[in-house]
Image 1 (cartoon, rainbow, N blue to C red):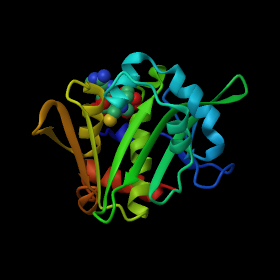
Image 2: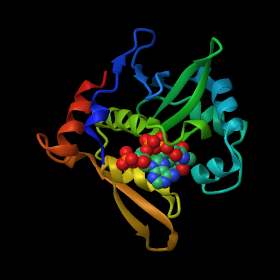
Image 3: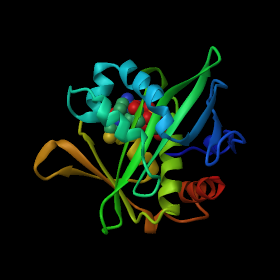
Image 4: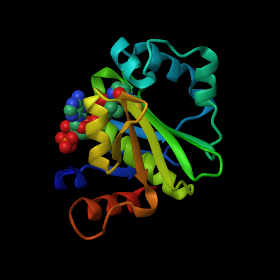
Length: 208
Ligand SMILES: CC(C)(COP(=O)(O)OP(=O)(O)OC[C@H]1O[C@@H](n2cnc3c(N)ncnc32)[C@H](O)[C@@H]1OP(=O)(O)O)[C@@H](O)C(=O)NCCC(=O)NCCS
């Protein structure tokens, strides 16, 4: 459940890059959330290489690692059929990637498949919520009707994040180890005015 406290955390447009926003984490770290570009290949590669085996497994649902060709494809997106937002912060004066969230539209259906992954030391600190809300805002603006995804059924972090933001969860009929996630954007946020619905609506409208 999203708390009232979270409404007070700073989210502001960033002057530095179009479409980017700044977010202050609870410990005061300033994070930039912005669309990925092809120039981010080295940043993304460093990020992926730094992920623990567990986090990599939770993201890909497999022990394999992404190839350079896949990383190139993941960074060189058109922003329309596929959109990805990276979270970065400055460490000793250098930009470092600490998370990425994306969706890929499925042809004609209005569905888009989403995925999210954070560096290990940024998990459980609210960044997943913030990134997913930014992605939902972008999906709304780009005509996505439903965001779908899948996660391992024992991935308690992703299940909690999905519930918090309003996804419906259903065990995959072919394998109980997989949970399917779906968020109907036509009916989202739930209802303005009260509780989570009002908060979510406010957050979406605040997106740059
Ligand atoms: C899954 C993931 C994106 C969640 O992002 P996050 O920043 O850790 O989540 P948040 O801190 O925003 O927390 C969201 C909610 O989930 C809860 N939560 C976070 N991690 C949790 C965990 N391991 N177990 C149970 N609940 C958890 C939080 O308490 C919060 O709920 P609350 O506000 O009601 O307290 C992140 O942990 C991650 O990158 N994991 C590895 C990759 C992965 O699993 N990707 C998903 C593949 S589809």
